Image (tube, each protein chain N blue to C red):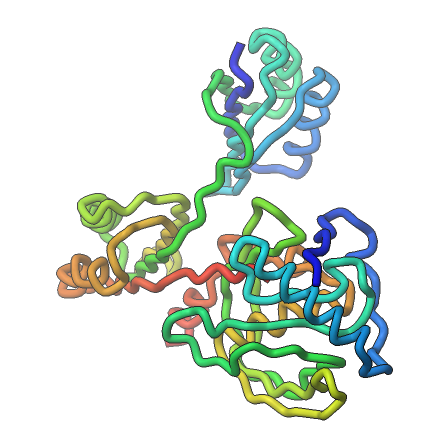
Length: 173
Length: 167
């Protein structure tokens, strides 16, 4: 049995989803690890590490009444990996511009060519329906310099997208 | 000189207010020396505060001089430090000897004016910016029972977004 399972959950956002789901998991004897929970486009989404000492079928059975009542879609998959495996990002890439198809692919293809490992990516569409603005914030690890990554991305500037690369100096105190 | 044990979250002593230093004696100089040895023994910390080793006294060490292209005042022992002026704000990622295996984003002033005494009790005033100013704010928080985890902002909080909206 894997040490951890990855629970993914999506449903229309409403108060109480996290409380109901985590209470059920606790009652089932599961521990929780790292999590990302966020509202996306009116949906609530969860990606949550759930300890693997209970069989997946048992956890899913326990969650079924909650998922039916709150209309949540749920997946549970055994995963390799574990806690305390953080990588510390050293570069941040901020992207902003008029929204158009392909921005994410354009930026991240260039980053991949630079050997940039994305550790976090968050994006949002701001502005309004007539003038949507795409904003993306990427943090990751790359052995190339800020200048090299910025230069590689500079071609995107001509397409009206601003791309700014900055170092992330983690202060330990 | 000795490497002291670092208190780790959730040790309640990290949440207590440190008392002002009144005696500038040999004991204080020994504490400063032990703090520096403890800082250097750990994972490349740019500062350390006395409460992190269980001494509830208002003394911290900051030294960002080992970082390239970073304005700094060198190795500083700050006794009874007090920030008298703040300017600007920026998000930066921080970690802490007392909070292993976790880093988070914290908003700090980008420029400060600082008053502090040295180990002989002489008062100095410093004007600091950027990384050094951040390090001082991080360490001074320890004297007031605050850890950076008490100030962490969401990963989605991005000052850049506000700038974009304003222009």
